[in-house]
Structures are given as structure tokens and as C-alpha cells.
Length: 121
Image 1 (cartoon, one colour):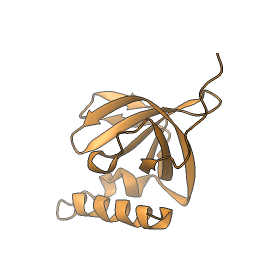
Image 2 (tube, rainbow, N blue to C red; image 1 turned 30 degrees about the vertical axis):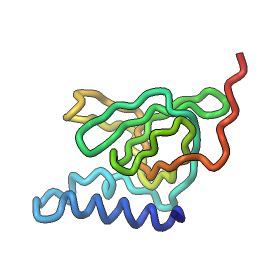
Image 3 (cartoon, rainbow, N blue to C red; image 1 turned 180 degrees about the vertical axis):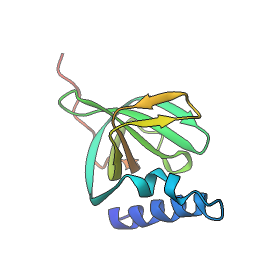
Image 4 (cartoon, helix red, strand yellow; image 1 turned 60 degrees about the horizontal axis):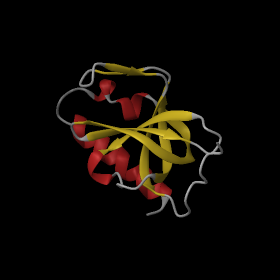
């Protein structure tokens, strides 16, 4: 699926989740939207399920780690992933998890087409 279609899919799902509840202002996908989506990739080193969402801690090729949240049902079970990031919160507190992420990327996650190189010892 093309990145632009993934962004539209996530925006539609986010809108549907808050529709009719008067909570559009609380929709983190809308609140933290980026002007231009970007791509990142890495190896999943931790998965934290939270209802319909899945938080993934990724490690990139230089060893830097970041947290990404995506829809549980669309997240691949593979370790090497590519993410189209369309929102970013400098600080995001998950009420469900009782945890704060600094920062948190919101994105569409898919299997990487080529594996991420392993870390050097």
C-alpha cells in the first residue's frame, strides 16, 4: 500500500474513533499532525499492546530508539519494519498504559522490504 493511502487510512480511522463523541480536540492524530509525513525504519525491540493500539519501540541502524504507535490490527508481526509517520507528540501520556512517551510518533507500520542491518557489537 502506498504511503499516501496509509495516511488517509489512519486519518479516516482516527476520525471514526472520535466521531459522535465530541472529542475531536482530543484526537491525538489530529492534534499532533505533521505538515508532511516522513519515513523511518528499524527493528522492533518491544511491543506494548493497548486496546486497539500497539506501541512499538524501534531501534534504527545507528542504535537510536523511538516509540511509534499504530493500530494493532494493521501492525505486522515481523521485526524489521518501515513506518510512515504522520503525527508526532513531544510528550504523550497514555491513560490506558499509565505511561508517558517522549516523544511519540504516530504512524502506519508495515514490513520493511529489505531487512534492517544488524547492530555492530
